[in-house]
Image (cartoon, rainbow, N blue to C red; front, side):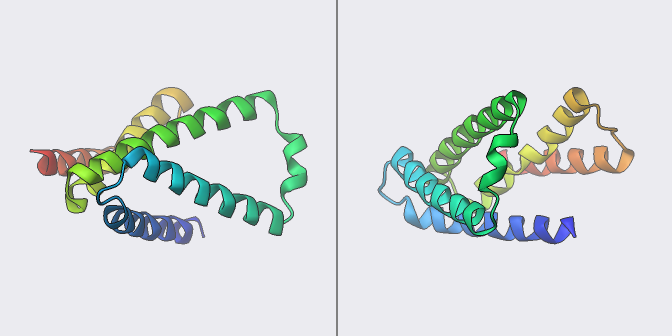
Length: 137
């Protein structure tokens, strides 16, 4: 079941790139990121409230809070850089290079989370890296 959500995520990420490229034409990319963030904030809280998850906020630990805030900071910085890259480059170049985050996440997961690095995962990460280099150069 996880792969269905992963495919949907990839589909919506692709739409994000297309919509953003059109939407940032002649716009300050920081302002565009701020608008996008407000929309996401409203949607995320609406989902939490509709699904009845708001009551679980009291169960979050200090560690949960710290790392969710850090994740939010990383997401925000990623979006700011992504929108600027889209404004300066082509979607067909920026979006795939942005997915280099997959290979970086694999390395970080091995180093910091102790996840196993299988041959299949290593080959996949190297292919992503190679593809990104082809697009950059």
